[in-house]
Image (cartoon, rainbow, N blue to C red; front, side):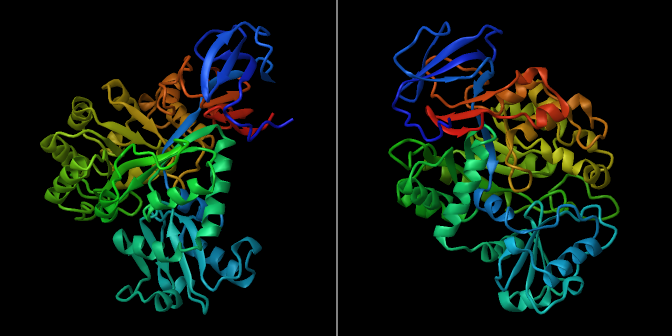
Length: 493
């Protein structure tokens, strides 16, 4: 019998579990009032509802510390271009969809595709390759680039882009337009995506959606408790309005305490695949260093404004120069927060992140997606790319995530990438940068990877101890049960 949706106020016993980190002995875990009340020998508590877990492993629930929930919900309903290896292949997928539109894409005038990565393509995207009467907009896997045909540019009023390719702010602006869905539909899709995340053991996400995450989650919380906890981020263009409403990092947005205001997200540069990540050294064969998204003095000013209003910063920095400038600003202002991505890092800045107490909010699966791109476009410095192990050894706190839709919203995918550094049968890439399963679990929870009396009952039950797994077994770990604040949000037994 499924227990999903059982009220958290009732007492509940998770029976015959092996508690992660507490040995192999089976015990009962008693939950009450949404918290872990106590551990007992099996069978001692009889005045409570019981879920028998038959010797499975109980762990803290998992967090994804960097997602874009609306983009993830939309990507699940867009033309999939993730398997294309050239502009010509992507164009062929588009032309096939135009000739015989898949039912799940609907009958809307605009065809939107998602997931192409052109960093290694032998040819170049161009509007003429996807020419059609129907407007077509294709969004890159890292969200930093859009590729349109002439019909789409006409409909969207895009001028001066003869190739149909836009990057960074211009691409974000187009994505905002093509991502508009009525709120009822979007909220339903986001709820579906959150339920799917709960089914993979997720109890919380940091939602860094660009377009109004705070008011969107206020609305969703009024309609009912979401199946995961949410920290909803704010962007600089929303800062004044949210400050005027009394918002700050950590402020609850619902009576249940499941949704709260998250960090101030500041974008300092672009991305690797788009070759706009801001680097100390030029990209091979070019005189381009990538580009900053804002001037250093603008970054400092945002840190001051946000800090005075009670916002903790989350600074997107992918290139090593962007990271250096970000740490300069953090040091000058004297604040703490997180660096999002930290994909290329100098040795000096690894140590400086530790000294400054900055969290490295990283997405290990990006290394698996981009290992070949890094070796080409960061040739000669790829040993400084995706240095998860180096950051951990230096004492930098880690927070793992997916950046969904850039990688799947599945914490076991992120865990496996951090631990194994391989995928698809390939050899481990820069194995010295791997971390232990214990470290990856600690970076994927809000409790440091342990279950303790008094903790919120944000829990996940899996068949086997994940510290004994690796490779495909870790990546595809089955989830039996997920609880958020003592409420069963997924029951897959």
